[in-house]
Image (tube, rainbow, N blue to C red; front, side):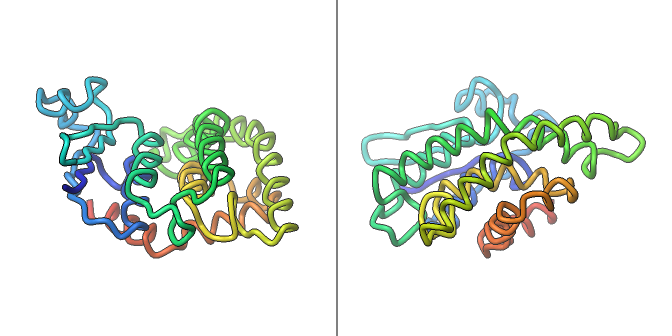
Length: 219
């Protein structure tokens, strides 16, 4: 038994890698970049016919289980390998499970496209290829969902809970922070939402995430 995770830390594969690291799981990380044809080999396409990373393979006694799509990989890991007793990042109650599901899908539908635009056109792309007007438009659109998240986190704090689903850090925080972190280069925007910014900083400063950032810089 064990896990194999295909991808690189500087991609959406960071999500299942982060979850497995937080859980202290033993897993094999197969360095698989999204450029250069590594995801187009017959062997990789047999795992994910879409040709995208990440792919997670859970080697189980009854047979291997392959999962693709980064949020699905991440939620699968914590559901199948977390303790679920409130001592780790896995949901411990139906409410925590619901929060993990809804905020993970919300992050993809409401944040990801614009957050990625901010990242690419503020820092990631070569300076001469960036289009600041695209980043500015994305930041304007992000104000709407960020108001929703800010309100939720304020309500959580009012009930003595410092994170999205509970007092402790859970997979709901991990999935959401892994997307919203792309928007951090929009400093003025993030300053408008101080509770969200503080929460995000705590999430991204966790040792497991910092270790994966260091891994990403090596490649």
